[in-house]
Length: 169
Image 1 (cartoon, rainbow, N blue to C red):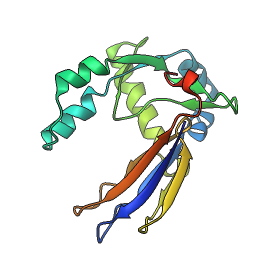
Image 2: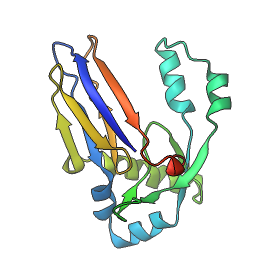
Image 3: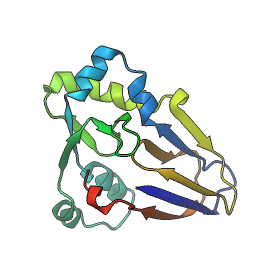
Image 4: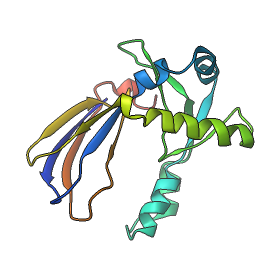
């Protein structure tokens, strides 16, 4: 699955996007931590990010969202279908816990993994210009808009699911 993102409107200052390479994030973990992560699953729930958006004034119906997209459990380490490479699959926006671990273990490991993925050595940062187009594979990457702007930033995004049989994996 891939995405295309096209810059339409930028603030006068800021508005870059960063992409993190989750292959490298996994590959640079120590072997013992890799083995541990290989055995773990994580719960993903979009409720956290929806509550944040609602608090900022977005008119979402939380109950409707929760009914349509309930929490799901996925492996912490995903294997890319084409490359066979392993990548970390946790994120700050929706990963709520590592299922097999205690609360205390989660408090230590989950923030570590999330921060590890966001390390600058795994990132590419794009400074947009109107009309710039970015294309990436969603499976081994994470992206986010750098929150350093207050004016309008408008992008057009298309997500491509080239492998519908793998849409839920």
